[in-house]
Image 1 (tube, rainbow, N blue to C red):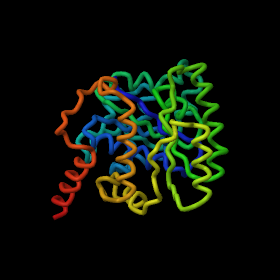
Image 2 (cartoon, rainbow, N blue to C red):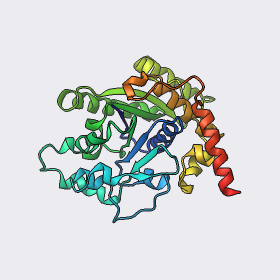
Image 3 (spheres, helix red, strand yellow):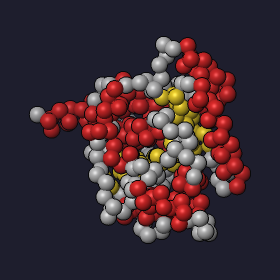
Length: 286
C-alpha cells in the first residue's frame, strides 16, 4: 500500500509546488514508483513538469467531479517512474460545485484508492488556501509535509494549519499524521532563520526535517523549462537538498510498508541514479 503525502501550507510563497515537484522527482530517481497529483487551480505543478495547459485533458477536476477515473487521468513525465495527474484552472469551480454534494470531502480519497497499490508514493500539491480542495487532499492523505520559510510570519501561519489538521483528524481522517516540517528558501547565515529553526525544533521535535532547502537559482529556473531541478541541473544545491529530503522520508518506512522489495546492496543510491539521468540529458542535448 503506497503512502499518500499532502504538501500543504495555507501561506503562499513558501515553496509548496517546488517541494511537491522535486520531492516526487527525487522519489522517482530513487527507483520508487511515484505519482504527483496537482490539486491547485494555478496548475503550476503541471506546467513545472512540462505539460502545457489543455482544457480538454482529463485533470484532477474530473476526478473530484466523478467524471473520470484516476487511471484515465495519468500522464507520463520525463522520469521513467514519475507520473502526473494534472490540474486546470476550472478546478476552482469544484469549490462551488461540490458544496451540496454528499461526501464531498472524500472525493479525492475515493478517486485515488485504486492507485495506492500501484504507486509507493503519491504526492498531493495543495493550493495556498484551506478550502475544499485542500480539505479533499488532507482527507485523502496519510500524512502532511509542511514547507515553511525561516521567517516570523511563517510561524504565525502554522497554528491555523495545525488547527485544521486536528479538526480533520477528529471528524474525517483520524490517521492523518504530520510527515514533517521542512524549511525552504533557508539561509542559515541569518540570525532570524536560526531563531525560527530553534523555535520549530522546540515545537515539532523530530518532526522537523533534518534537511533544509536553500535559496537556489536553479530551483527557480527549472519550472520555466518544464523540468524538475534534478533533471535541469542535478548537481545544483537545490536538487541535492531534495534528494536528501526524499532519502530522509523514505528512511521513515520499512520497504514492506511501501509495498516494495528491499533493494540489493549493490543497487544504485538515489544520487547515483540522478547522475544517470543527468548523463542521459547531456546525451539528448549533444
